[in-house]
Image (cartoon, rainbow, N blue to C red; front, side, top):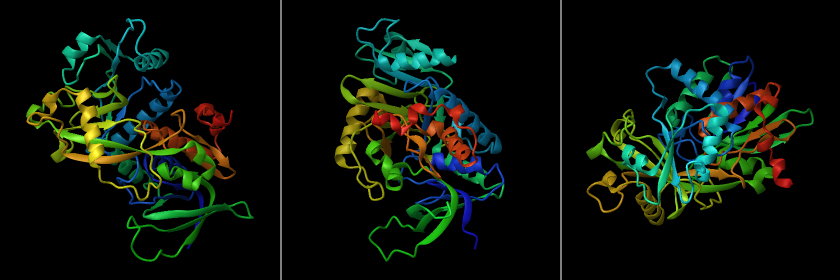
Amino acid sequence: MNNHYDAVVIGLGAVGSFALRALSKTPGRWLGIERFSLGAHARGSSHGMTRIYRRAYFEHPHYVPWIEFSLNAFRELQDLDQETELMHECGMLLMAPKGSACRTDLPPLLAASAHAAAKHDIPVNFLENEELATKFPQFRSEHDMVGLLEPNAGILRPERVIQAAQADAQLSGYAAMIGNTAVTNMRKRSDGKMAIRVQPFSCDVTGGEPEEEREIVADTILVSAGAWTSQLLPQWAPYLTVTRQIQAWIDTSQHEKAYSLEKMPAWFMETPDWQIPIYGTPADTTAGTMKHWIKVGTHCNAEQISDPSTHSLEVTRDEYAQLQHTTMLGLHSVAWTGHAVPHFVATEPCLYTMTPDGHFLVASPSSGIFGVSACCGHGFKMAPALGAMMADFALGKDMLQWRLDFCNPERFKN
């Protein structure tokens, strides 16, 4: 059995799947390793039925070209399978209290997005409080809330996207994948090759003896291990914190039109009554029995996770109550007609891996290895670009086009 590969991708979430897909377009031996099941799973950061994509990026304008690249890749995948809807343009609405700001002095959240929009010629519409309340009555507009609407933004369907990327990666015959396999060690051999120790992995950490390890050899290792990045790249551990966010769904079938993709945009809101931003997506008519469910979630909750492999997939009472509280700050109660407080028909945790400044780590921490950290809660929409960066490194291509300086871990040493 030939266990040598030109490159091995560790972690087949969104970024790793697109890295393997990018590599598969070039003849070679490429391998992807996933700790959990292939396709999609609920243990990390690439699940939850919907993800928001937007281009007017308040986090940093340098991300906009990455998003443009990624949207083209999503559309390519969509063209390959017209029957599976991977994305939908429903618009994206940012909301924040205006406070003392005037029209030319937007709240910081909106101002940063407007700056990115102006820099990259992205259409956006500013909504004063009265217009916001009239056009989008689904949201509470107290505190003189104002909005910035990006009409050409929308949602991605993460599980379908990952499955499509992995399927496309295998079409050429150059790429292989193995699931339910944990990487236990990485080292450089005396001949300059990279050795990777792996063993079968089960989520049932209490049962049975560990199965026998084996070794895989690679010219290059590409790490996209999400919340497990610190375990594989300990030199990055000081800059990475794994946090637990909660996402939930509300059945709005009694008012289905008001909360549909045609009437309600994806949204992100800051409110003075709660320190954690909240976000959500409209009901997705392609979601089968969930087609009338809107999604809500917390963004950048500070609860830290010590071991992502063993964190509970059950939402606690306190987490449930906190999300109820934040949902009541953002949405009008008509969304949960018949209940005094929001009633969630489903809940699910999601892991964010945060850096101190909210930007990614994208770099080569040592010879033969290139890593992309999990993405601070805003990376799914850029997964194809981040995956292409990894592939470019393995293929020896020029990395300057990606303008990675602001994502270099060395920034934290200054």
